[in-house]
Image 1 (cartoon, rainbow, N blue to C red):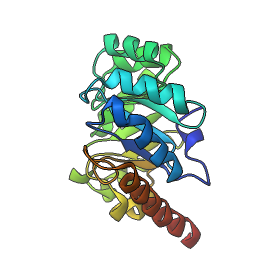
Image 2 (cartoon, one colour):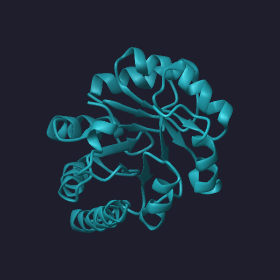
Image 3 (cartoon, rainbow, N blue to C red):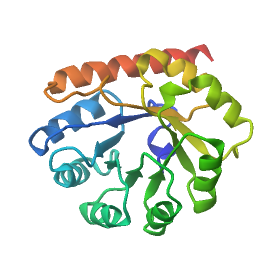
Length: 212
């Protein structure tokens, strides 16, 4: 199932970014996110033993959530991720060769971009979902302008400073969703805290949907 398939009409369009999570806690944090309604989970590769965390999440929740890695920069890392069972590959940049590698393996690709040139280069390489990064540095108005020229079939996710406080503004600007890191999880947070934050974000999103 694709990224959009895990963020349907009943599920918040949110990628939970678990930077710094440890394998010993990742299953409890993953369950807390699922209980809070979030079904896309990214473990950045600069987290402790990230491949182990990804493998554990995929084994436990792979049927319920889209599990993957962030901060992916090389084809060798893509190969390791495929072996660990990851299905989502998130990059901070636009690298056409890396995108083609991810697509060739049948994985969901979410490459980063900032300029229109990078966005179109990513689409030409095979990406159907893009990550506007760092989103907070340009704002929803920038995305709104880009949406006028990008193909309507391409989803754009706002990541980097985007959070629950401005989710409505990003959605109104044409974002497919947002990536949320510290506003959902910080190292040391308990599963209950993560669950409460996820539920609060879900409630905000539902209020936005109902107002449309």
